[in-house]
Length: 203
Image 1 (cartoon, rainbow, N blue to C red):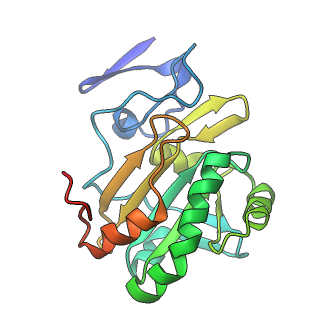
Image 2: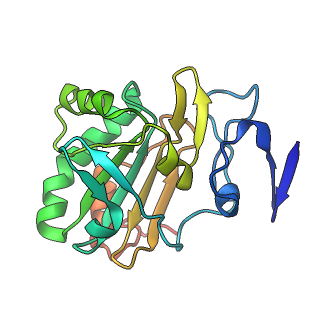
Image 3: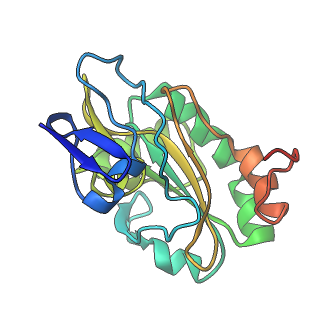
């Protein structure tokens, strides 16, 4: 059955629907399509309020987005899973700039991984990351942002990068069109320092 929401038509059987008002902002995996390939959506979270969330952290205590925003901007990274090499590569680039962003710009980095805390902790240790990871085993948070999909690994988040300012507004959004389509840490560092604008002067 297909459901029309605004300009979008969504084939409900393969979409995990958590919030109908956000449905058209997500990339979803159609039946028979290539795993990890996502059509581009017309409506996104950019310039909208970032959904608040609280998740368990590999640091040993829960982390809440709205609390990190009280200190400064926050980068939210939606990751596919602990098994994802593209996720690990991206996380390493954010690990490299995390202290610099925190010390000079009061920026927190919140990588959300759609796995249980044990697997997420193993991922942090395996790649020697200097950022703490957040466990989203049910995909509830990922679904509020870029969406989720069923893959050979089970339910996974669709990879995405968000920069949220201290007002809670999403200033930057990049949702992957395929698993290797990523925004890296150094770009985000200079995007924030360029007053939330493309440091290369692009649109």
